[in-house]
Amino acid sequence: MRKMSWSTTATTFIFMNSFIYCLYFSLLAVCTSEF
Image (tube, rainbow, N blue to C red):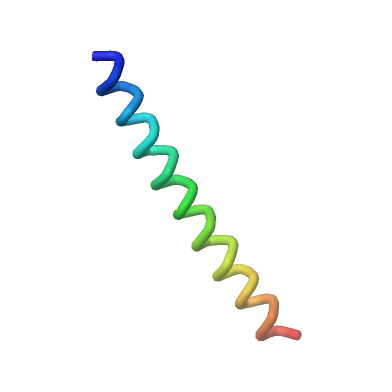
């Protein structure tokens, strides 16, 4: 139970991290193309 919970948390964290990373880079690309 505890191991499963930790695994789910880690997967969610990695997913959110990559989502924020993509969002950050797309924002950076928009800013770079503007200037």
